[in-house]
Length: 115
Image (cartoon, rainbow, N blue to C red; front, side, top):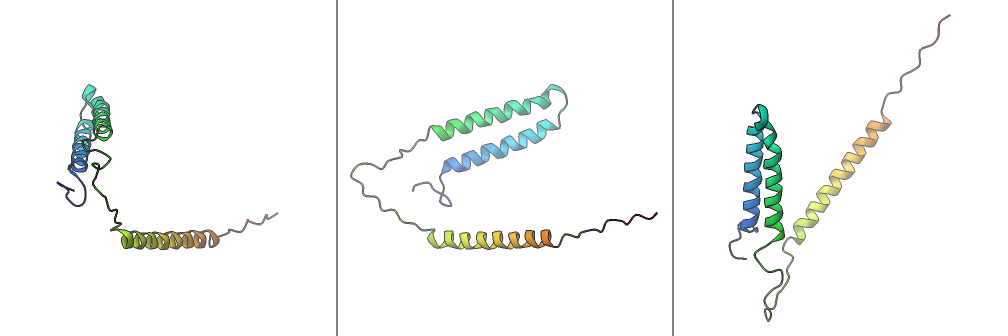
């Protein structure tokens, strides 16, 4: 994987830079007054079009060159199961907290009528 930094290619960094600049420009334009304030919509739509073009027309081929044997290796196998275990523990813990909150909700007595 030539040109890969942190396991991703240059396209990811280009898209991240594009959206950071669009976010900054949208924040700056939202502080403007008059018609310039509504140009945020056009900046956002232009960023969507550029992103769609960059995603739909990739440079590299999806398929390897013929005659080249590819060996698929799952290098993140243990990390994925650790992540799954942590997410399951968080889900069960939050479910427990939600149910205890629901069960321990106070029930207020209705006032008695005095004649």
